[in-house]
Image (tube, rainbow, N blue to C red; front, side, top):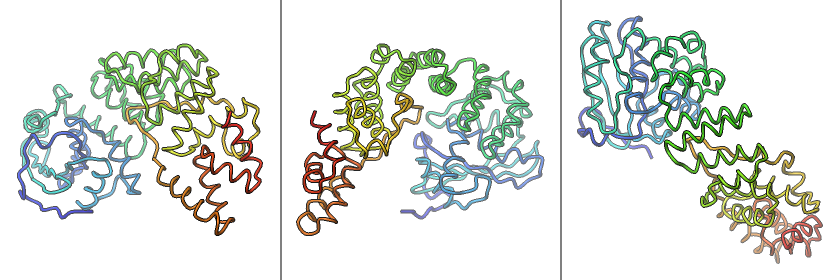
Length: 418
């Protein structure tokens, strides 16, 4: 899958091409120790201009079992970029002094080519003029800093890199008053603290953000959900939805009302038109709370045909079977049914769905019936595998009930036949 990367001007980049997803790595310090902060400082600088986050790069490396503070080959860095879903990789090196710095910036297309850019000047001039002029030529770039004060940027870089790489928030805490004066620094720290699950300190930094974006309201709302302050969570979700209307906000608002036991409001706000798996599960939860069990079972059946009987779907099905008076051991022993509404799935900006298992369902079904005449014991194991992920196959249930005499599946068949 990996392609050979040809360095140095193999294919000229256009500024229009380099727009969108990318991964930035720490820059190599070939100068003195006093410049060490720029190792991550230049990474954070370019991430800020091109709207990426250091914590996301570190998270991708952790997913690949790579230490985020190590030195890596270009091939490994490109693999990390692909893990992030990025099309471009940025790295580089620098040497010299604060007043006379020589900087090399490399930009890679992870599938084809690379180009180098060279800059010289003081750190102040590079940050505020030279690199700014360079970066703003790229499509969809932004300038969030205002005027960068080098000493202030140094503190920001050190605090953010310490947090993302080592999960150490001590500098964020000690420097929060300094960062509170600059909304972009506060906003960046808020998002990084959220990613590192330091929700208490993240909430403090949110108060310093002058003009929160919709995604900021989404994250602070989710923090309030974790704190079970559902009224305040709804308030934040509504503000975020006003800035950028989305089913994600509507889903989360409905979830707050569900956990407040305000079923009428949950039904009012939930985005019923959304047919993705997460929304099917959450809709079935709300319908259960409203006593609409038949429709909820129909939704779980549709969900299971694509995604299988996940823990979430199984809990809902087990809950309904109990309510209907069916003691189905297969369900009751496998899935948690107490406090069912706590299974509601709140969504963040990284909306997700479940992995589809339709091919596996069809494979189990085919093998079950293939072995049924030749080897009934082997067929039984495949029938049970099939029902474990798709318990709505009535033909398989009838065989397990009538031919194998398994009472639990007779009960499940009767329950689904109602």
